[in-house]
Image (cartoon, rainbow over all chains, first blue to last red; front, side, top):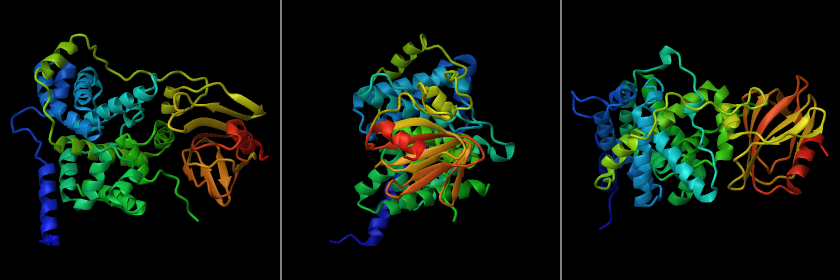
Length: 207
Length: 212
């Protein structure tokens, strides 16, 4: 039996719903951002255990999607959380969400591991965290509010735009690789990325 | 005619995802240091990447993983600030370039030099700084791959378009370009290029700086 477009759309919505699991901790529990603060201020190991439970498996899943072996993904996920511990004092909630901050640490470790494979002494990738200046208060949203809005905006994205974002950030594909993989013109991938970002941005601007 | 002087969104996305090689990534960083608009976009892309990470289903860690991590914390010293970038004898370099390190300058005449940016010669890319005095001609040829440029000081002109400090330029190697440093003063640019260069780097540079 041929799959109707309605069925296909329903499947996509289901997939999307599966992918976008609720992530917020139950009310009354410290947020991940609080935990990072506790680590920075008091070397709080319980806070570390909570963050580890939340993020190590996600980082591992992210690395496996990038084609890293399960064994190396396990090591790098552990290293990512150890770096979170060491760098907790540098986390600036006005500049980044917890997810974004941990993502950049994991990405740098991954890029670094790839480089070590090819070249024994390569420098760590320089990220935006190294070249920032404080934004004016009007530009700074309450981080948790910003986090919530970005999550909501992703849920609202059309499936084709979300797919391109996932392939970019979870499979680590360049936009050219995404186009090849999906068998679509490069221009389509570019416009989906631009539309997706414009939508997320629009949501944040409405606040 | 207006030309785009910012990296396109998909290049910024590749930069944040880690898929963009380090060499063109340095040019993107150099531009972002000057451009609040692109910094906002990069932050937005990081937030999106972070939200996708937050929402993803985790892969279970091996038994004992958290204990192993806790044991490592004993020896993991906490840092309160990122390490200061290496000092460079060239002032006003973008932080990312200073951190990568710049090799020795090769002089080709008064005010005309190039210097390689270290740790970037991979995946077929090279990055270098190129400096020319006011009015220097830099015809574009002898090169067959992608090229990303960020103007660090001064300005250069390509036909009717003038590119100034902070501008990001992606040149199409199939087109003939006639680049010229404007009369306002010397121009320093950061260039990442990909692909073989006919006659090697020196020939390329000499043709750019002297208009041979």
